Image (tube, rainbow, N blue to C red; front, side, top):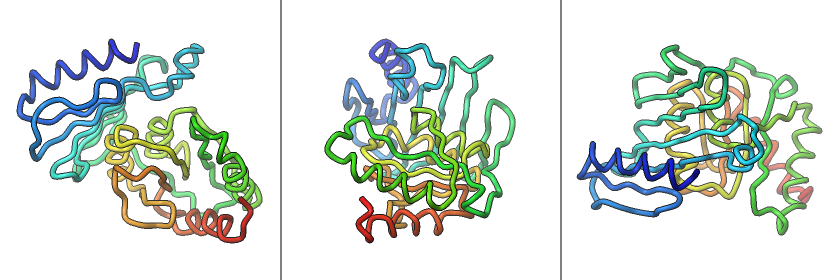
Length: 225
Protein backbone atom coordinates (compact mmCIF):
# COMPACT_ATOMS: atom_id res chain seq x y z
CA UNK A 1 0.00 0.00 0.00
CA UNK A 2 2.84 2.40 0.90
CA UNK A 3 4.56 1.83 -2.43
CA UNK A 4 1.38 1.96 -4.52
CA UNK A 5 0.19 5.23 -2.99
CA UNK A 6 3.65 6.76 -3.08
CA UNK A 7 4.17 5.83 -6.72
CA UNK A 8 0.89 7.53 -7.66
CA UNK A 9 1.75 10.72 -5.74
CA UNK A 10 5.34 10.90 -7.00
CA UNK A 11 4.42 10.27 -10.65
CA UNK A 12 1.68 12.92 -10.46
CA UNK A 13 4.03 15.50 -8.93
CA UNK A 14 6.76 14.71 -11.45
CA UNK A 15 4.33 15.33 -14.30
CA UNK A 16 2.89 18.55 -12.84
CA UNK A 17 6.18 19.97 -11.49
CA UNK A 18 9.05 18.47 -13.51
CA UNK A 19 11.60 20.98 -12.20
CA UNK A 20 10.93 20.31 -8.51
CA UNK A 21 12.75 17.92 -6.21
CA UNK A 22 10.62 15.20 -4.63
CA UNK A 23 11.58 13.32 -1.47
CA UNK A 24 9.39 10.38 -0.46
CA UNK A 25 9.59 7.97 2.46
CA UNK A 26 9.86 4.77 0.44
CA UNK A 27 11.51 5.75 -2.86
CA UNK A 28 13.88 8.48 -1.68
CA UNK A 29 14.77 11.47 -3.88
CA UNK A 30 13.96 12.28 -7.47
CA UNK A 31 14.20 15.39 -9.60
CA UNK A 32 16.78 18.14 -9.51
CA UNK A 33 17.80 20.47 -6.70
CA UNK A 34 15.92 23.75 -6.90
CA UNK A 35 13.91 26.22 -4.86
CA UNK A 36 10.90 23.91 -4.49
CA UNK A 37 11.01 20.57 -2.71
CA UNK A 38 8.13 18.13 -2.04
CA UNK A 39 8.07 15.81 0.99
CA UNK A 40 5.71 12.83 0.75
CA UNK A 41 4.49 10.28 3.30
CA UNK A 42 2.18 7.76 1.59
CA UNK A 43 0.77 6.27 4.81
CA UNK A 44 1.30 7.82 8.24
CA UNK A 45 -0.17 5.58 10.92
CA UNK A 46 0.83 2.36 9.17
CA UNK A 47 0.06 0.13 12.15
CA UNK A 48 -3.45 1.58 12.32
CA UNK A 49 -3.85 0.95 8.58
CA UNK A 50 -2.74 -2.68 8.93
CA UNK A 51 -5.20 -3.28 11.76
CA UNK A 52 -8.14 -1.60 10.04
CA UNK A 53 -8.18 1.40 12.39
CA UNK A 54 -9.24 4.44 10.34
CA UNK A 55 -6.71 6.81 11.94
CA UNK A 56 -4.14 6.97 9.16
CA UNK A 57 -3.45 9.55 6.48
CA UNK A 58 -1.62 10.49 3.30
CA UNK A 59 0.55 13.57 3.69
CA UNK A 60 2.71 15.77 1.55
CA UNK A 61 4.18 19.20 1.93
CA UNK A 62 6.12 21.75 -0.07
CA UNK A 63 9.13 23.82 0.91
CA UNK A 64 10.49 26.88 -0.84
CA UNK A 65 14.20 27.36 -0.18
CA UNK A 66 13.87 24.96 2.78
CA UNK A 67 10.91 26.79 4.39
CA UNK A 68 7.55 24.95 4.54
CA UNK A 69 4.97 26.82 2.46
CA UNK A 70 2.11 24.40 1.76
CA UNK A 71 0.66 21.12 2.98
CA UNK A 72 -2.08 18.61 2.25
CA UNK A 73 -3.13 15.75 4.54
CA UNK A 74 -5.84 13.37 3.39
CA UNK A 75 -7.60 11.06 5.86
CA UNK A 76 -9.43 8.62 3.56
CA UNK A 77 -11.16 6.31 6.06
CA UNK A 78 -12.87 8.84 8.34
CA UNK A 79 -16.50 9.17 7.31
CA UNK A 80 -16.66 10.68 3.83
CA UNK A 81 -12.95 11.39 3.98
CA UNK A 82 -11.28 14.53 5.24
CA UNK A 83 -8.65 16.68 3.58
CA UNK A 84 -6.68 19.25 5.58
CA UNK A 85 -4.80 21.82 3.54
CA UNK A 86 -3.00 25.13 3.88
CA UNK A 87 -0.81 27.56 1.99
CA UNK A 88 1.40 29.90 4.01
CA UNK A 89 -0.41 33.18 4.57
CA UNK A 90 -3.81 31.88 3.39
CA UNK A 91 -5.25 30.11 6.44
CA UNK A 92 -5.92 26.44 7.20
CA UNK A 93 -8.88 24.38 6.03
CA UNK A 94 -10.55 21.00 6.51
CA UNK A 95 -12.18 20.25 3.19
CA UNK A 96 -13.57 23.71 2.37
CA UNK A 97 -14.09 24.91 5.94
CA UNK A 98 -11.64 27.17 7.82
CA UNK A 99 -10.17 25.61 10.95
CA UNK A 100 -8.56 27.12 14.03
CA UNK A 101 -6.50 25.80 16.94
CA UNK A 102 -8.14 25.70 20.36
CA UNK A 103 -8.28 28.54 22.87
CA UNK A 104 -7.49 26.32 25.87
CA UNK A 105 -5.13 28.26 28.12
CA UNK A 106 -4.87 26.04 31.21
CA UNK A 107 -2.75 22.91 31.09
CA UNK A 108 -5.10 21.11 33.49
CA UNK A 109 -7.82 21.34 30.83
CA UNK A 110 -5.55 20.48 27.92
CA UNK A 111 -5.67 17.29 25.86
CA UNK A 112 -2.09 16.38 24.97
CA UNK A 113 -0.76 13.74 22.59
CA UNK A 114 2.25 11.93 24.08
CA UNK A 115 5.29 10.94 22.06
CA UNK A 116 5.47 7.18 21.46
CA UNK A 117 8.10 6.67 18.75
CA UNK A 118 8.18 3.37 16.86
CA UNK A 119 11.74 2.63 17.98
CA UNK A 120 11.41 3.06 21.75
CA UNK A 121 12.95 0.11 23.58
CA UNK A 122 16.15 1.98 24.39
CA UNK A 123 14.39 5.16 25.56
CA UNK A 124 11.41 3.71 27.39
CA UNK A 125 12.44 5.36 30.68
CA UNK A 126 12.58 8.75 28.94
CA UNK A 127 9.12 8.26 27.46
CA UNK A 128 7.59 7.17 30.78
CA UNK A 129 9.19 10.18 32.49
CA UNK A 130 7.68 12.57 29.93
CA UNK A 131 4.24 11.01 30.31
CA UNK A 132 4.48 11.10 34.11
CA UNK A 133 5.24 14.83 33.98
CA UNK A 134 2.11 15.64 31.96
CA UNK A 135 -0.15 13.33 33.94
CA UNK A 136 1.12 15.03 37.09
CA UNK A 137 0.35 18.42 35.54
CA UNK A 138 -3.25 17.32 35.10
CA UNK A 139 -3.29 17.00 31.31
CA UNK A 140 -5.53 14.52 29.54
CA UNK A 141 -3.61 12.23 27.18
CA UNK A 142 -4.88 11.07 23.78
CA UNK A 143 -3.08 9.80 20.71
CA UNK A 144 -4.24 8.78 17.25
CA UNK A 145 -1.15 6.74 16.37
CA UNK A 146 -0.26 9.18 13.59
CA UNK A 147 1.80 12.28 14.38
CA UNK A 148 0.60 13.90 11.15
CA UNK A 149 -3.04 13.38 12.12
CA UNK A 150 -2.33 14.58 15.67
CA UNK A 151 -1.01 17.86 14.21
CA UNK A 152 -4.10 18.24 12.03
CA UNK A 153 -6.41 17.51 14.95
CA UNK A 154 -4.58 20.20 16.87
CA UNK A 155 -5.14 22.59 13.97
CA UNK A 156 -8.90 22.08 14.28
CA UNK A 157 -8.95 22.20 18.09
CA UNK A 158 -9.43 18.52 18.94
CA UNK A 159 -6.02 18.36 20.64
CA UNK A 160 -4.21 21.17 22.43
CA UNK A 161 -0.56 20.08 22.39
CA UNK A 162 1.84 17.25 21.64
CA UNK A 163 5.45 16.25 21.96
CA UNK A 164 7.13 13.59 19.85
CA UNK A 165 10.48 12.31 18.70
CA UNK A 166 12.03 10.11 15.97
CA UNK A 167 10.32 12.21 13.28
CA UNK A 168 11.24 12.77 9.64
CA UNK A 169 10.70 15.79 7.34
CA UNK A 170 7.79 14.10 5.54
CA UNK A 171 6.05 13.77 8.93
CA UNK A 172 6.38 17.49 9.61
CA UNK A 173 6.46 19.49 6.40
CA UNK A 174 2.82 19.60 5.31
CA UNK A 175 1.18 19.24 8.73
CA UNK A 176 3.31 22.01 10.24
CA UNK A 177 2.01 24.52 7.67
CA UNK A 178 -1.56 23.49 8.46
CA UNK A 179 -1.00 23.98 12.19
CA UNK A 180 0.84 27.29 11.80
CA UNK A 181 -1.93 28.64 9.57
CA UNK A 182 -4.52 27.54 12.15
CA UNK A 183 -2.78 29.65 14.80
CA UNK A 184 -0.72 26.91 16.41
CA UNK A 185 2.99 26.67 17.03
CA UNK A 186 5.77 24.12 16.52
CA UNK A 187 9.29 24.27 17.97
CA UNK A 188 12.10 22.00 19.06
CA UNK A 189 11.75 20.36 22.49
CA UNK A 190 13.47 23.26 24.26
CA UNK A 191 11.53 25.92 22.36
CA UNK A 192 14.13 26.39 19.62
CA UNK A 193 13.07 27.55 16.15
CA UNK A 194 11.24 24.96 14.06
CA UNK A 195 12.94 23.12 11.23
CA UNK A 196 11.44 20.18 9.34
CA UNK A 197 14.68 18.23 9.85
CA UNK A 198 14.28 18.21 13.64
CA UNK A 199 13.70 14.72 14.99
CA UNK A 200 11.95 16.02 18.14
CA UNK A 201 9.21 18.62 18.39
CA UNK A 202 6.75 20.27 20.72
CA UNK A 203 3.54 21.55 19.13
CA UNK A 204 0.60 23.39 20.63
CA UNK A 205 -2.35 25.69 20.08
CA UNK A 206 0.17 28.51 20.59
CA UNK A 207 -1.32 29.69 23.87
CA UNK A 208 0.00 26.77 25.95
CA UNK A 209 3.34 26.48 24.20
CA UNK A 210 5.71 27.91 26.79
CA UNK A 211 4.01 25.96 29.56
CA UNK A 212 4.19 22.68 27.59
CA UNK A 213 7.88 23.24 26.86
CA UNK A 214 8.45 24.06 30.54
CA UNK A 215 6.81 20.85 31.79
CA UNK A 216 8.87 18.77 29.38
CA UNK A 217 12.14 20.51 30.19
CA UNK A 218 11.57 20.33 33.94
CA UNK A 219 10.97 16.58 33.73
CA UNK A 220 14.17 16.05 31.79
CA UNK A 221 16.32 18.32 33.96
CA UNK A 222 15.14 16.81 37.24
CA UNK A 223 15.97 13.31 36.09
CA UNK A 224 12.43 11.97 36.03
CA UNK A 225 13.45 10.27 32.81
